[in-house]
Length: 131
Image (cartoon, rainbow, N blue to C red):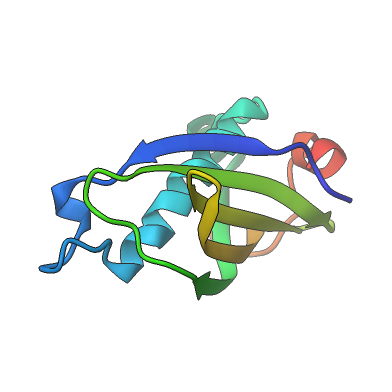
């Protein structure tokens, strides 16, 4: 199962970098989080309503990341996101950060759907059927 590719553009700002002008490693996790949130929104899922009305949230269960090259101040980047596996309560997503055509970061992220009390539950049907 592989879903269609979702793309999310971003620019590296001064606040994203370390003293050498290179993106600080933890910021890649922020970049892919923003892209996942945009991807979920594009799937028609309102995470605020899901939490407030249904008492459900998404949580990252696992991240496996590879840093392949540096991004620098003012770089224009693209985060590519696609679902690669869906089970009842988990979604596995592959994400890449690109500068032009160069892949500079990759991650495989496992997302779980939880109640507000932290109990695993089935993913919303919209994600289970379309990834």
